[in-house]
Length: 108
Image (tube, rainbow, N blue to C red):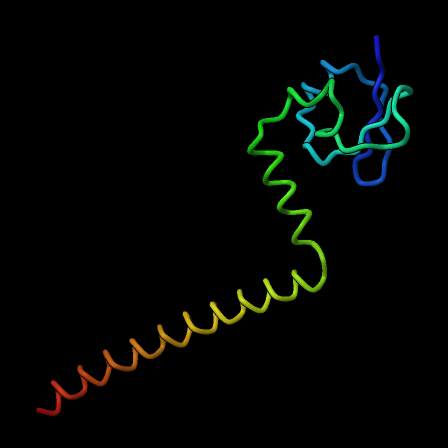
């Protein structure tokens, strides 16, 4: 029976069988090593373990890997900050308009 080792937070754990790994609910990005592989590989790239992951989970993890480059992360962060700033200021503008209407109704 093939034995696998995993790396979680830079701590090596194992050995595990493929069935035990399925029970541990590892992610597609979990690093896995066995004697039949050259080095550590992500679980989603090991043929014996691929069936444990849905295509959606693999696609999501792949998109996360693509957006971890610093220049892309900075752009995403900036877009989030702009969106938050616009939402916050738009909300304040609506509150100001509301109080102006209330004040106008009281004065008249």
